[in-house]
Length: 73
Image (tube, rainbow, N blue to C red; front, top):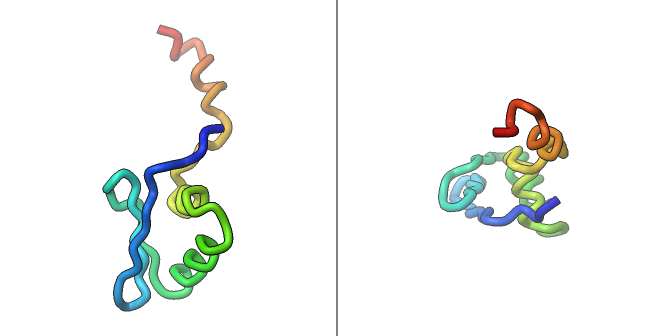
């Protein structure tokens, strides 16, 4: 599984965190969720953490979908 890339985050006033992917907003976190996210980013792989929090990560079924007869054109 390829490593996620292209994610970044910015802390804003009021405890808000904005996560972007390739320059586009992928998610906004506020309050306790923002604090939890920041703690997790500090302790792990930031790209993987941001991919998980935004739901933008591979789910393991890509190979199955690629080999489906409907996709063999």
